[in-house]
View 1 (cartoon, rainbow, N blue to C red):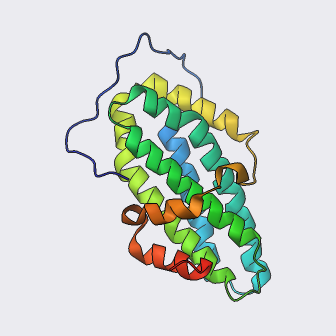
View 2: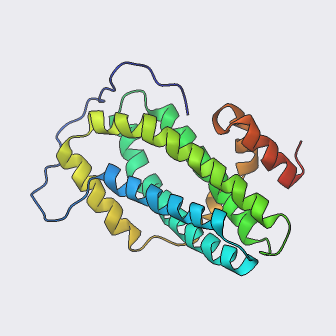
Amino acid sequence: MPTKSTSRSTRRPRSGAKSSGARPRRQDAIAVLKEDHREVEKLFKQFEKASGPQARRRIVESFTEALAQHTAIEERIVYPWAREYIENEDDTVLEAGEEHRVAKWLLTELAATAPDDERYEARATVLIEVVRHHVKEEESDFFPDLRDVATRAELLDLGDELRAAKRTASKTPDVGAVGGALSSVIGHAHDVGKGVLDKVGVLTGVE
């Protein structure tokens, strides 16, 4: 993602703001997304400790479903809101979307690999590194911008939308959004990190 300035994020001009009445047990959008991040990280750690191809396969299936739903609802609800209402956030959101495409592409590669294939663990490791990189930058850059600009009521409304959307979101990565993802990886070397890029290249035969 682009380097953020030290200035506080500002809001694009808009007319009106959605208000929200008090409801029990609501979570704001950032809390919902961070909860997803923690769930996926827990699964990653389980994978790193797992032994045996079938155990690894079960964990991969679990984090594939979690990531498919998370990326779908974030792209449908939060990213468009940020592009509309946060000044100078377009580049950040566009690059976050590209990182999602990279993760989806890696998930499809992993799903097509037998769990006893010698490349299986390596592919999962690269996917984990890409997602961890994305989460770190999103939580340190994008989420603070979102909290600076959105009102408490808006964050709660977005949280409600995210939770509702997750109930019907597909548990399979959106293959239609994966096209060209490998070129996106290469085009975003400065974001993903050269070490991860090198591993992607080895796994795909791209130098």
